Image (tube, rainbow, N blue to C red; front, side, top):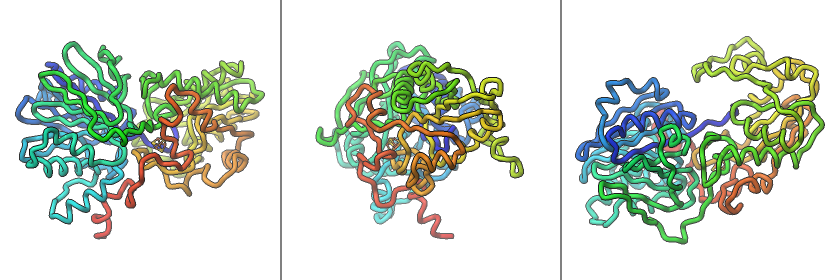
Length: 470
Ligand code: SF4
């Protein structure tokens, strides 16, 4: 419930008679990762069919659509536009035909050298039909098709920079791969003899799929009728794990295992650590739903302050909600998030929020709490202050729009109209996950970017030519 958006979710199945149905259900489990468009591509071993559309999974596919796609291998994608605007040409999987036949590509992340690669192709006369960075992957594939390489996919992946968890469907195989930093999650599962790949393991649980393992940084899997073949497609020196810590803080579902850890357990640890770093006298702990719940449990356990339900989220307010122009901010927040007056009235409240980005929606929630009679409001944030933009697939605003950029905690608390604020420290955050601190990206807190940033990065970088025409 903060001002950042999810990015993309991937789900693929190879070797199952109901592959398309499973992908469809898998995309439901990944819907939180993108609500702008959805798509599925499937193959019968010689051709590729696909169906994509704007909106939620439930709106994009009908029963006849799924029947028409029915095959033993399929990949699916849900998207929030982190590169390229929200329109159907940018929906994925992207399907093209080149000299080796048809191919479908589904991508989660942002390529930091996409603009550079696209400029090179366009200078040679290539024509692009979308404005998203995924299209350079198919141009690279087409470009190496005639070069007789043992593994053209590995060659192409090694030319990419930035964040990419990828699924590629060809008539004879499913390719799954992660960038050498493994910024975004991707896991492998089994369903009988079939192989399954998903951005998050919560989709496995729903479909009785056995979780096998994470796909490793720099790893490429070729899944064919002959089985699974794994290799590292880049030089070992390039493999430097830098997992996005925000997957644990906010993006992934709490019932997923991400980068080897239970997301719920990590969030509960974050809450415990937050209570140690920022204790306070209070009557009750409440979470901002839904992502604050696990950290609120941890804060309450560590502080011995009772946990209660302070906010009720409406599950029926969709993306089409139009902010009423005349209503005050507090009441427009309450359309989505109502306050339990009985819990907060006259009380000293600890509110657990996963992060504060611009601060405007958080301020609305704090105003609503105050209007419901909260006596004191102590906001505890289960992440460090977000001060820098993300170039790896998260749509944070620019630095000067970030509330924590250039402001002290006291100034932020005054802006939010609360009694105190406490953010988790970076070392405290990293103490809550199981891998070494150096294996995580914390760039939006620290400004230390693990992957070099391209000169023309940004959500609309690929649209500059189109935009400059107007
Ligand atoms: Fe994740 Fe922040 Fe790194 Fe982006 S900058 S990948 S949001 S930790």
